[in-house]
Image 1 (cartoon, rainbow, N blue to C red):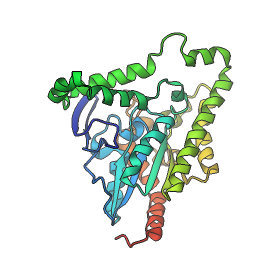
Image 2 (cartoon, rainbow, N blue to C red; image 1 turned 90 degrees about the vertical axis):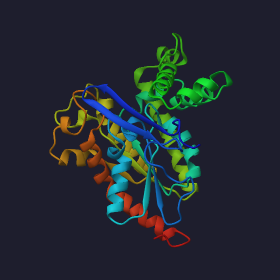
Image 3 (cartoon, helix red, strand yellow; image 1 turned 90 degrees about the horizontal axis):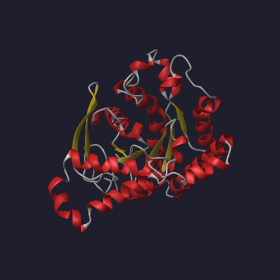
Image 4 (tube, one colour; image 1 turned 180 degrees about the vertical axis):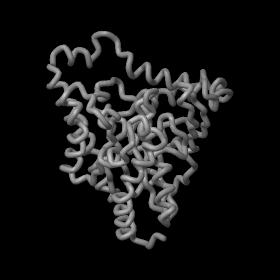
Length: 313
């Protein structure tokens, strides 16, 4: 199974009275509706990669970036499938691994979303991917087989495993590798090392896709701190979105900056994000994202059809 989630789940979550949403995991382990493992010959398949911003934290299945893109493109007459490969808590390191698992679905286009916590989150050890993979292994152990068969589809059991994964990721003991590095490196040095790590894995993803003639799009997703009055407290955070977008462009990756589109709506940040309850995009925020991505996605779809060995409807 290529996806990172336990298959065939349906979970209602209300982490806050104002944040109620429904998430469905299909039989391949991805959020959203069912798709065939083998891509239909007439379909252009798009894979969206990223963290909770791509997954669609606190919005329903039909309100995520992937769902909006698919609906808009189909309304224009395009035969497309947009797969939600977002996994909360992941970094570019994890997303390279998730891409490798997802190549069996033969995507034509991959959209990688950069969220503004992506650089700092690279200090988390071990990677979320490894923790989730360990959860999957534990669920399959003989000792848990009966329990697994009884409760594998319940929200409680999967919630406990999610907590376990998060705890393993962020509860490194005192004297961990990250802390030892921090004690010997200045803040600027650590920050640049994280950027080097991000750049290395972004280029690895680019090369993997290029070698398979899969088109890649880099999506720069802004934090709510960029809407309205500037609330940044340091210059490194203030420039990191433009730095990430410049990095992708310099690698030759088609890049979309969402910030102008967010600002051009004239909406307050509370109308684009789940503020004051949470900083993730809300339903309107995902609509704006999808609309901003449409032009470059249309171009990529046309390029796919032009290069296809056999005509695609």
